Amino acid sequence: MIASTPQGQGGAGGAAPEPGAGAAVPSARPPGGLRTLVVQQISSERPRETWSKKMDFLLSVIGYAVDLGNVWRFPYICYQNGGGAFLLPYLLMAVFGGVPLFYMELALGQFHRSGCISIWKHICPIFKGIGFAICIIALYIAFYYNTIMAWALYYLLSSFRPTLPWTTCTNSWNTVNCNRYMSTDHNVSWSNSSTSPAEEFYTRQVLQVHLSPGLHQLGSVSWQLALCLLFIFIIVYFSIWKGVKTSGKVVWVTATFPYLVLLVLLVRGATLPGAWRGVVFYLKPDWQKLLSTTVWIDAAAQIFFSLGPGFGVLLAFASYNPFHNNCYKDALITSSVNCLTSFLSGFVIFTVLGYMAEMRQQDVDTVAKDAGPSLLFIIYAEAIANMPAATFFSIIFFLMIIMLGLDSTFAGLEGVITAMLDEFPHVLAKRREWFVLGLVCVCFLGALSTLTYGGAFVVKLFEEYATGPAVITVVLLEVIAVSWFYGTNRFCNDIHLMLGFYPGFFWRICWVAICPCFLLFIIISFLAFPPEVRLFDYHFPPWTTVLGYCIGVSSFICVPVYMVYYLLCAKGTFKQVHRAFVNCCAKRGL
Image (tube, rainbow, N blue to C red):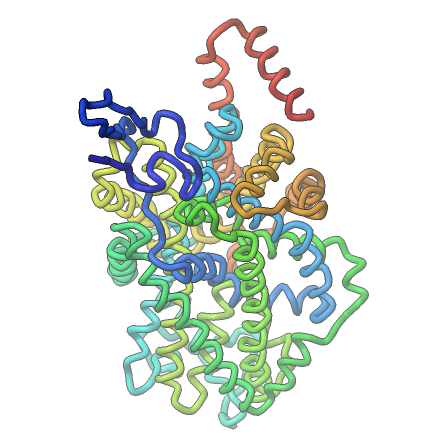
């Protein structure tokens, strides 16, 4: 009789089992000369879940990396920073900063098969606070990111009408300043106080921001948006409650449908009058812009937030891969798809902006003055409304926006779920569905402030301060901990064990020196040139800047707090602990 353990349990995929995972105990030889081998399973660890197919993993990573920022942020930053000339700093920052960090996180997650908290017991335990900080940042993102999808859902539901409601000025929410300004409207005069019906629908009907004077008085919760957000979170829950087995199937729709819509909109936009004006404006290089520090700062920040290292997602997704999966090739494929999608989105946006400029008899830069969500919910929505078959294009466009957001939400919450289940397996492993339900409820309750009349101001505050600086600082500590404390040589040996080859000199120098400098450059730039935060006609007062930094620090503070906790709980005197730490660093070449 032979009893065997499931392959990969207590180990790392195809790697040799860890000591203690099982023991082969030969019994005493019986009189007949036969020998019995009994394998005792003495590990209590559950077998780790894996992706059903390799494509499930790739689509999940692509869906996570390709989000709403690819559609609205990259095109705006590109034309603002020199058009085609911006592609040079963007690609340089991607090659020397973004992709190496992306590759590093995939390799770490796949080798150690752990989430962003428990992985630090294998790397450098004193940095475990990084994992807790990542989880808090992910919650902050969930508080505001899903609200943008709720706005898109409101638009989607409003699209099922014979006439789109943001095309006319005869609705209850419109003001006397509302003007439908197109070249076909010969009797309309446009002034500086005029507003388009699309702008009034967005600000006065969807957001109802006119009912809030600012962050000091947010007003009541919009029940329409609350129901939209509730529906979004119901979809999220039933997509991730069973793990990557279910979410890996959902992304076959949510990750591929946006590309189909982008291609449809690109073809439609290219056939519109004036489309070439938008493309020229988008790509016309202004080489003088490269002499500005702001261009390089924007390029570094864009590639970092686009690829998304440091949010715990890549660690979580890669931890469900087979041990010998080629994560190097995965990193190159998915990061390339992400960058190309950003470039493609620029054509989709600017062909339509060129059409709007042609219809209004204005310059493209006048039409493209809005950035962020306003670019989608005002300018693009208005352009769609003036196309033939407007209802059809409106439905697929806002459905695409929802799909792009859902993929990122699936990924962000899965990063938190994996981290907590790996850290507290005995408590949560058999209660995943209940834990996910509790997490989704917390995210919904945390998002209520973004559903108020002044909720758009809260979204802007979270977007500018609560996540950006904190996650960049966390990733800086992460790459330092891996490259300097865990050791680049040791990390490269891990990769060799998985893939059969060592990373080249380029990757080593990026991890040790270039990536830390890349991240430090972004942090210093942010501190030296803090963004001027404004939304519509509201300028954020100074106290909101302090509030924003406090929210950001509330996540990052986990890192030094855990370091102090770790030192206090360590055995021996502080001097002995310090000596052991120095010896450990010396062995790893520090």
